Image 1 (spheres, rainbow, N blue to C red):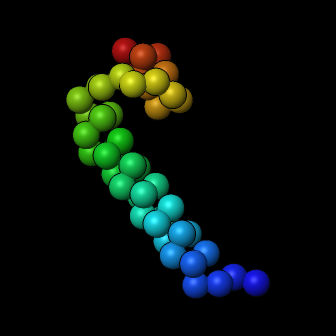
Image 2: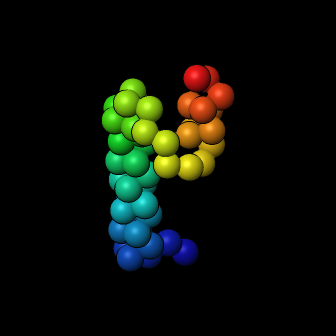
Length: 47
């Protein structure tokens, strides 16, 4: 059963992931900032 604390934690995780995705899409990728991971690997391959 899902309690109120679990819902709060889930909302925080979803908001954090959305913020991270926005940062990648609007800041990291356009300025080709490489910090590791799959997105950075694709930026290196693209160049």
